[in-house]
View 1: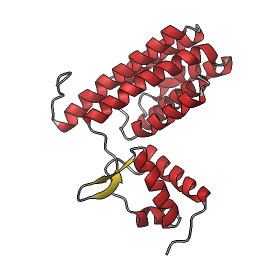
View 2: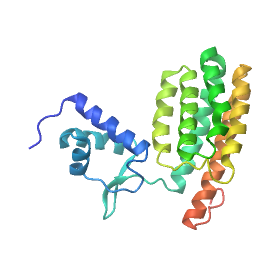
View 3: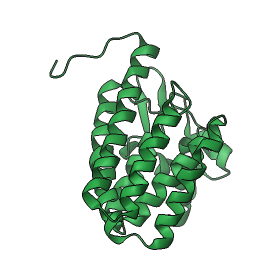
View 4: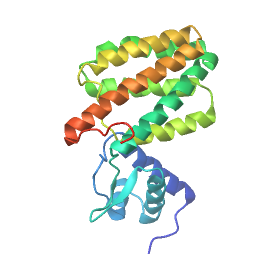
Length: 224
């Protein structure tokens, strides 16, 4: 019988499994069991059970028919929903960042954007730079409740593979980031929000086209 788990152990197990999902160590679709996770992370099954419950509530884990517990694989409808929320939340973050970001925060984002081209040929590095840039934007908004929502959204977005090195997206995203950085530097909240929204919509278009390519299933017409 498992011994009662200390509350901190449940949270630690949750954080470690969540990070393994985020960094791709546990990729979408991989089958999981309490026993395997407990062995992998060196904890008892009780904190793992608590972690699983939280991750299921967040949509990162799911029970699939005849397969049991697995890392979630977002379908077309879920991807659309994710990008709708990303556009709204990142747009709000950009507007707030233009108003509240410190000079140090803006300079840090400008530095990351300027250095993006050097990572175009290195997919993992480019993805890390992109993640860091978006994380800085979230923090620069200086709104703890928006930050919490963005962090949860980002955890689910991490289930989707990076497409930055496909079809010229790296250069396009870099140009979009330049526009956003310029709006932040100008302290223009409206322009920053629009830049962030345009960036999200461009990413969504590429993502949906990629889903059609890998699934072979045409996208439904709007409203259909």
